[in-house]
Image 1 (spheres, helix red, strand yellow):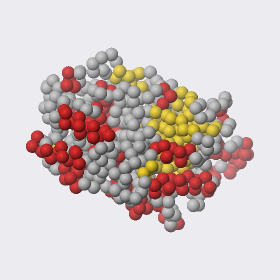
Image 2 (image 1 turned 90 degrees about the vertical axis):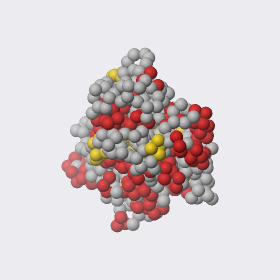
Image 3 (image 1 turned 180 degrees about the horizontal axis):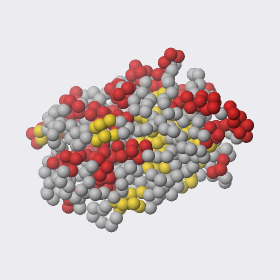
Image 4 (image 1 turned 120 degrees about the vertical axis):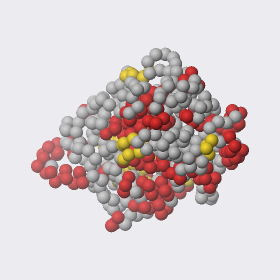
Length: 600
């Protein structure tokens, strides 16, 4: 494939001829990075031709056009900063028990990790920025009134229903606002190239949620409501003590734990939200909640489609029966949802009537790709957000794209269509991944690779056969990690799924890389991560990771049900959610870090 250069680089070449003497004395890429002219526009962010999803060659006339520069580079010299990140302050609780209000808390310092290479002195003055981007993961934009939701399993698992879920759209928009307000990459000050979402962008695999997600990312007005357009019809106005009933005086279980009575909360939760859209190009990786009904059942069964758009919703279930159902889900013993269907059918008389809504229908993988390719959702680009027409033709959801002249990104599809929330790769995709890595190393067109997926290496243990490819084997996380470790070009594997910050070193005799797993934006502490790649010019590279919260204030005001007030409340409710795990933020070495690597 011919080398594709960005408009910014070409322009820089034309305008720096008068500074040849300066450039000759310093590394050219360092000079261009310092002036904001290195490939920091969307040659940063375009798919490597329409064949990127399948490995096929792209027609010459269909070569991807550079995406317009999304923001101006900061004035030279580039400088680190802390404002707007967890290096400055992090939300923290007040008090010691009951419902705890949040406020400004102490910052998380940066930890230097030398598991894979030593941190040599003086690198701060030598380093050159190579790439910088933001990772969103597990946004779980959720239609809280969707009939397929299993809130009634709350007694079995805290993830079945969360008090904050009705505010997921407002919370995600606030995260977009935070990214738009960043001055660049925190460790170097270099311009940010793009945002990547690493899956579970939706929660119920429903078309309305997909539309909300695309508008959050690219800009638009969103009404996070379904069913009756005039009112909320979910578990939070059911009168059941199992759930927080914010508008009612009922002493439900959550109010007994200190949750407030907030008159007008439900009306505010389904009110229109406005997203400015990201001012950066953005890319999309698919997760199990984006591809499987309930995030765990094999798609294609007409029962799920009919139930999703229908007029009945189960809101409570006998605890013993619920425990048995959850056990099946957790162990992956019901990948096709047979037990779930049996329970739903037997409980039909106890279901409550809700307004049917065709918008709740599940979307197929092809519809997911088509929605991303819709120019109406292009935002700052690229059209398709990584996906191409070849993905549609080949029925794939994986692709490669150029990040900068030196770095290529690879986005994987780790969802197993056979069912269950854990993941794996099919043989065809694994071979495609290996070919891409070999191409990068042999072509000399780029030096480094960053791999993106939804599942972590430890959560890729589901080797159930893909019903569409019954003769194809599935491959787990250990096998994928071994493949990545055989290629020195691979620097990082960036993922989510676990809802927890964790950074894991992988070392083999052939090479080493860092696995960077980031917490979700549905559970506290609701984070995203900025990742920067730099060359230390001493035989090592560094990956800087910096966590950010949404732009919403840490302190909440129960009387403020504006879009910003709801985003702040989203975070505080998540902190106080019964059953919430206090360990999801990870340890200091999993948060703000410098991860040192040997240069391949």
